Length: 351
Image (cartoon, rainbow, N blue to C red; front, side):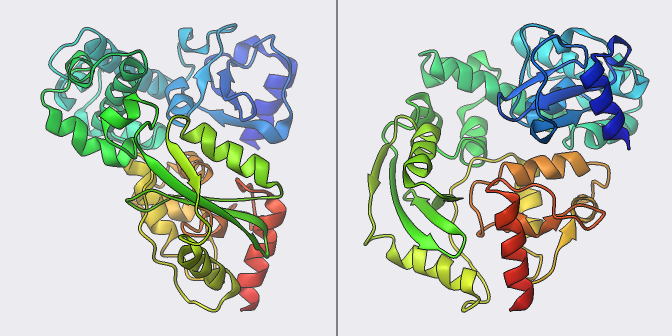
């Protein structure tokens, strides 16, 4: 019901709704205020967020035309989170000694530490410290892409030591900072494409583990997607080498193998990893709602963040995001198409 009201506000470009939420368009990866005069998107391409920061956490960038970040939030609780985010961002931009401690941050926005922590978890799905880590890492990525050296980028972004950056690198970059600086240059990725009951199946691996499992109808499009993700890596086709990995995935898909346990090499936030680990606990033939997953990881209000984590899963089947459905029982969206999701769920239930 709430999303229907949001969508109506977007269609009518209702200025009084500005600040109450932002909407993001999957096809452009841009988020806007409700009254944005840009071309109206398709409803199927739109998702809603209470905070600009939540949209950015999901991978969207702010519209340069309507500047949705410049508006105060309509909800006082949401505005408090936005103010706290602004304090964190300012501290990091000024290269102070990291973000303020939780107690100091809470005092600056007029909340108790406990309440502010809960507000962050509810609206962003992460803690203030995790938000600071994400912003700091985003700055490192920007500096590395701009040509800065690793050491310079590290200290410019406010890391006290190299160990903290490299600790986060495996989980959030999927490669070391030096490798990321080069757009994946130096990383070697092998891939293959095979036929499956769900269409064409692309499997790609690094020396650390599986980095992509994609489904589609066109080999060229699947390969282009992989090359776009790792634009400067050395990517080679290796059908024979990856035959055991593909065979394991196909056997799991057919029901011949009860479990699929492959090493992974993925870029992800701590929150995404917790969601993905919970998805892997859902038994074959069963489903769980986004709300149930949010509750299982101890963040019952982070339903939208759970949905975003599912949408950002790059390894189909290995992390079974297809087993998460809407609270009303409808199958919901799927990165590789709702028809594939329905077919996959039906096959798993039958077996």
